[in-house]
Length: 470
Image 1 (cartoon, helix red, strand yellow):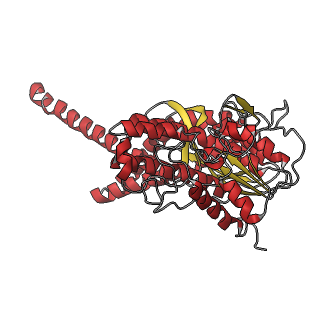
Image 2: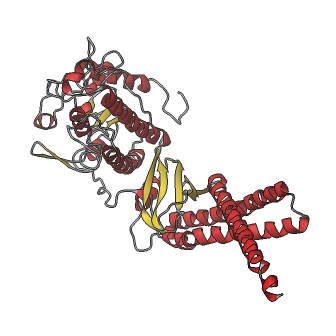
Image 3: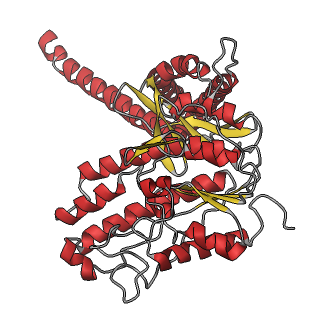
């Protein structure tokens, strides 16, 4: 009798164990679904510091157990300098910039021993509020999913209550277990942040600009930037510095001077980047040049400052050369390189924009976007090795750079015109771009410089963004 009675018992226990395990797995899946949904729909929390608005949320789950957070800036998702513990980390969004006296401190920070960490404290509070909302939404999502499952299975009321309790317990255990490390360590890390640069900017920011030399009170407009603004490849302007920088008498600075009757100071230089040229000194052709923005500050009565920058920061000429010698310049390695360069540029661009906004005279600021020199078909460029696919890659990356330039300018309420070279690309009958055999291939011709001047002039005739019309 005992042998007969013992037979069904192991099988029964096996079935019960299987049912419990299957139920637990199902609850785990529902809990994971609720957490994933909560991370997507939980509203980012808004914090305001020095008139600047930042939204605080969380990244999506990551397989690694530690790493940087994210900050969305100028349309780019950039990694933070701070590394956080846990698979879910803070995500910040710079959503509104206010031009005020505290802007430079907000971006660059103060470095005295008693400097307040208001930014870090606000970010920490925002993160804690976000997690409280995420926890509540996870619980609500779990109850909905488990309740729907119980209703579909037509479980009795008592069983449904047990399932709801079990699902809630599993979901919050998973949620807290997966995110707790970040939840409890992130506030301490965020509280140490004194400035936006500490969070996402360059590790070594450019030195403070100290204008030196006599004031240039007769200057009405200033041009700063790279070889596009300098007028590379065209007839040189007089002067040793102009020769060293490749600065031309046919640049758009000269066109704007002629049409407006202005004295225009063109400080642009071949090879200039934000860090080595605009905000920091540049050594070019054996000549050490002071920061362009420092020189621009000497023109204290200038009503306009126009900026052309970005191509040299991204090492654009090397990108074009590579696309001319490889069958496919859109591979993962070059994509990663471009994104790395773009992230570095975005950080420096934030520094530049904040310093332009803080200029004492508050001139109108125009950030020029780049023209498209290529056109839609290879045409004569095929002789240089540029295929249709690689031209599409270059055009896409140029559009991405222009998007960053435009979004950054818009956040600071600066203008960002884009010259239209349509029908006048390099291979067109009347190109606005210097040819492959020219001194500065892909750079504007004198007609191209005029097209840029016309785009800027159109902006100058309109009301300044954020200000009422006269």
